[in-house]
Image (cartoon, rainbow, N blue to C red; front, side, top):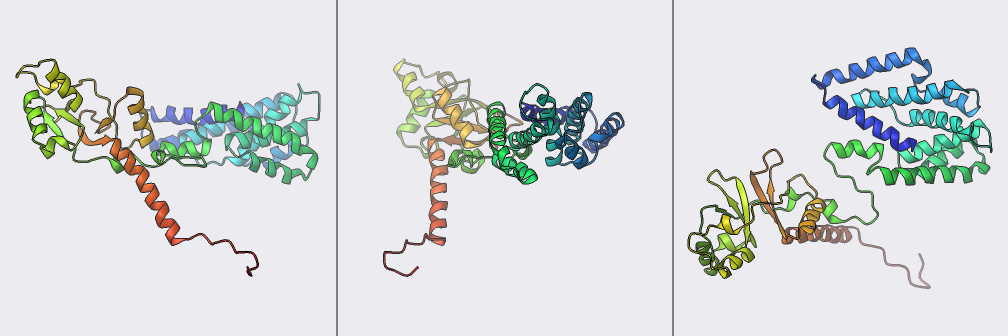
Length: 348
């Protein structure tokens, strides 16, 4: 729980700073001022904190001082990182985890304060950084005590499992994701999570004016006009080339079956409530929109202007992302061919 709370606090402060009506260059100065105030109240929250970590492991810090270190360090560290002030991650996590473990030791009948401080350090590190095995080995190297491995295993795995359920990303990858880079940590990578819409969309989207008649569009489709037959869906735009709707061949057939007169426009027969995609979205998000709304195509528009058309995304574009990955894998295998296993009796 502590790992998830710390990660949430860091990026909550970062979001808070983005809402301030001042230039971002002042944010680190405000963060530094807050760190200084925190250091005046509790000096042990400043610096790397190795002495404090050592004292926690030896059980020398007790009582209200533990809560002061835990709360003070959490606030100072989260505020500093949220403001953009330089700061580390490893040592502060160990200090806060150790303080939390020492506080919990008062309510656990087994072991002493130093034992639970160490388990708290490893659990806080493993959960926040999403690296439970690294945290276990790190803690084991500090003590060289094999008897601690069961406790470290339970603590680190529990912390990691809880943060995975509570948070989408770790404290390290969240920063990268907020800068526009999609992070994927699965062993089998879905190509749709690695490619953005703007990379595979058709930049020459087929558009038709909103004043066009359905009969005229039907005739052009029957004549195999390449401008209106390139895509299953056609984007409807107004006189300013702004998106106002979309019409598919199914909509055209439905309008003809209902006996639409010559005055029926494509805007009347098409859909006005258009689901759109953005060029900076990953294909997985766009695909989810298609599945949830039972559609096979999406207009691609600018995020700053949701009616400005920049492309068209259809099922064929999704297949292109898969084909691109297959081609990259094929080129990689040709460049670095796998070594054939030696046959029995051959020298290796």
